[in-house]
Length: 236
Image (cartoon, rainbow, N blue to C red):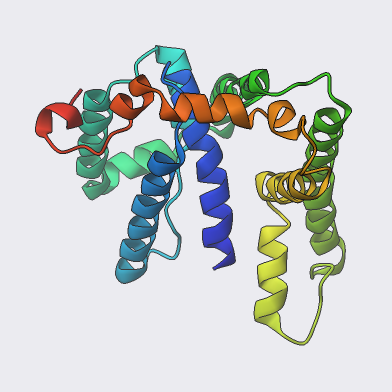
């Protein structure tokens, strides 16, 4: 359950980054919930086949949107079919497993900055001159980097996490949640946003909610993120 929660939070950030990098309007809540729902179905299928891991959105693929400038659904569908076909061939998987780790690290240095910059671009909706916005942003980023590092180092030094009760399942849940930087940052940012002067007149404007609602209700957003009902829409 904890891993699924972390996967949902991390995938939600990837969805927003993908919409930004593909040149589409910010993803509305209706489309975001559909994406999370499909991911949940994928996780259930993984459990049926006993894969031992759930499904999550690929941050690297989101970075490829900016690197290749290709955001067509048709390309994604064809790529998915090719990957499913190659997954049947063990030799292909063995070939990719032989790729040196420095090469993989070099790819990440190109792809992850694109995704990170896409997330920072959403700050254009907020009033970054507001003390409230600056405090929530800075504090959540700092805690999102420091708390997971503390949990990981604690396990490395002592063999168990900071939470060490008599219930192993509870220890594992806390360890998984607080070892994920995006999850910790989102929890703290959400808590501060809901508790730090939530009823002030300028809060909605400073947090960018007014502009976000205008995008969600626009005709272009509704057209792009409508439910796919035909093959033409699927392959657009």
